[in-house]
Amino acid sequence: TPHDADPLAQRAAIETLVGLGARRVELVDTLIAAAVGCGLPVERPEATMIMVCGAAATQVAVLSLGSIVTAERIPVGGEAVDHAIVQHLRHEHELMLPSQSVRPLQLALSGNGLTPHGPTTTEIHGRDVASGLARSVRVDTAAVRDAIETPLTAVLDGIGRVLRNCPPDLVADLADRGIMMVGGSALLPGFDQMLRAATGMPVHIAERPDVCAVQGLGYMLEGKIEPLVLAPLATT
Image (cartoon, rainbow, N blue to C red; front, top):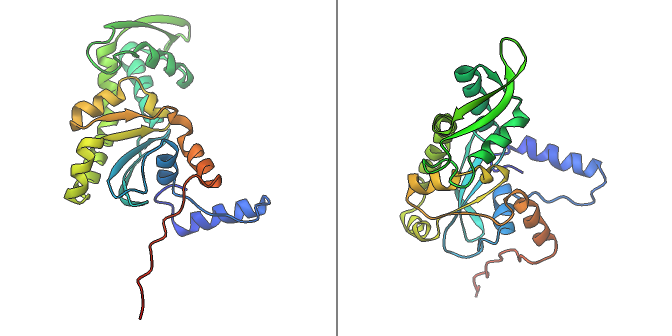
């Protein structure tokens, strides 16, 4: 379940799964599952930071000792980036581009992606806004980068809030370990480089970012991750 899921949403998830035939339901925070799935040492006292880049939202959290120290949900995800590209092409080039056609443009920015070292222009195929006929335009990738960075600024603000709410000794750990990016939108070309430049921290993308949360649940089901049990105090 999402980190900020309220009790009503959690209850609805449990009742739905029981209604589908599950004998027992345990809810796991998406952030914990994703961190386990990408191999972060969540059970250790050292702090780790994870960023789950989804389609509709981005979740950022600092984890330590198997629990979430502080977390933030930013209502900006891959769909907002796609929308920014579509709106830019419509306003600047009078070109209509279906959302599913945004991916080729993002791939055209791959390699150096959002950095200025990428290709200067790329050709995009779409439909003319006025006539509806097929048309191709050569798009300045620097302008596209500016359009993409606007919604991503909200993600940077969210990371800043998480760091400000984090104890100073844990922030020192994060300076060395950096941020682990998971989720399908983590593959947006150049997103990691933008975060690295803005935060000054190391930024890593998980090996298979789109399935980390599912892998984490699998590891838990297989018993590869043992739940933390604190030793009780001896009583006399």
